[in-house]
Length: 126
Image 1 (cartoon, rainbow, N blue to C red):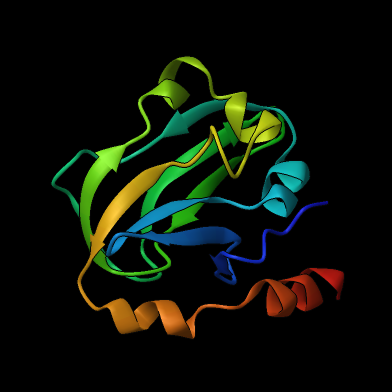
Image 2: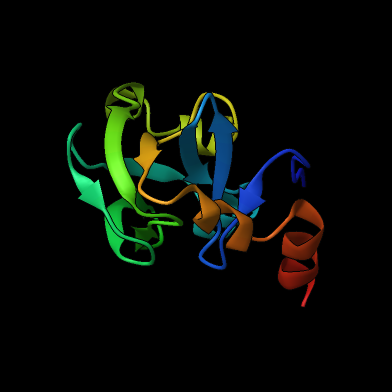
């Protein structure tokens, strides 16, 4: 199971990648493997505000529906529309094709509060 070292992770299994002052968000390989085959992804609209630890969307698998929780607060500036027609990308490529949203952070220091890859691996090993 891969845990890219250049990302930060939330306790709710979202990953965060900082790119040019914005933050790309998706769910971890561990999360998608626990959920099973993803059949539907619901995401916010561009311009929506998200708040740390509040739901910003959901993923539906053959097993369950799971909320997506915002790892940071900010404004949604981009949404991965490909997931509407190809939710299986979440299972196939959670870190590349299946990013979910890009956010303009309200407070970039929130990123430092997220787990490093090493801390996240320790958490999921428990």
